[in-house]
Every structure is written in C-alpha cells, then in structure tokens.
Amino acid sequence: MDFEDFLTQQEADTKGRTLQDIWNFTDTEIERTHDFIQIIFPLDVPSGVAPQLGYLESDSTVAAIKANDLAKENIIISSRWFLSFLKMNEQWKNPYDHNHLRITRIIRCLRLLVSDEAADEFRRNMLDCLGSSHVISKRTLKFWDTA
Image 1 (cartoon, rainbow, N blue to C red):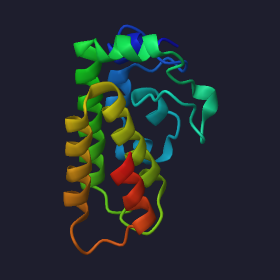
Image 2: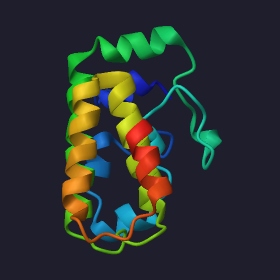
Image 3: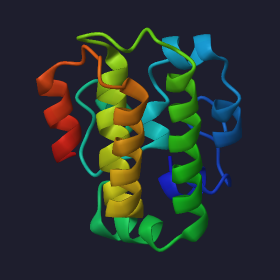
Image 4: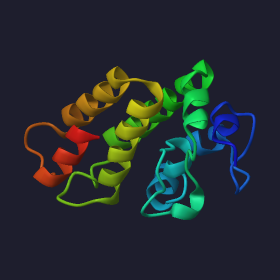
C-alpha cells in the first residue's frame, strides 16, 4: 500500500477502506477495530502490535508525505476525529487501555509527518481531555511526553 496515496484519498487500504470510510466508523468500530491506526497514522518503524500493516520504509517516503499538504491536512483531520471519539467515551480513562498506545502513535506521527506544534497541540488536548483527576499511569504520560 502506498501511504501517501492512501492519506490523499487516491487509494484504499489493503482491506478496500478509504480514509473517508475509516472517518465514518462508529464508536464501536473505532474501539474494536485494531488495524486502522497504523494506516491513518503511519510511522517510520514497524508497529509492535501489527507489523504486517507496513510502515514508512524510506526517508524519501517520509519526505514526500511531509511535502504533501493534503496528506498532512488529512493526518490532522484524523487526529481531530480520534480526539472527538475519545472526548465522547470515558472507557480509556483508566490505568491501562489500548487507546493509550494509539495516542502515543498519533503524537509520534504528527511530530514525524506534520510538525512539532501539531504533535504538542494534540498532546495538550489529550491532557485537557483527561482533566486533573485522571488515573492514567505515569509511565503512559511519560510516553506521551517523549513521543
């Protein structure tokens, strides 16, 4: 799969889903589907959870996406879409939840492909969403800080 083509909505993923299809997921689909985060928020390293989904294997691929305004805008839209999901659901606000790993990935992707500012803004939004009385582990918060 060509990540740049997927992120600019010129190509579907290996399951035939477009970016718009994923944005149309229900909350249940977002929570239970585990093979879309690696595609809409690609990194330059294989996923420890789903290495078969691929990754940005070359510096030239990373550079091409960073230079593509539509791809970057769609990554930002995806981050806002996922933030909206989290704001509407409380189940992830506990000491451990798979969404914590997803949040770390989103921060890393934004930093890699969009900008430090976009990554920092998403992280701040996550912390605001948690509020001061959260039970997220310090280890998870450290991952978010260093992503």
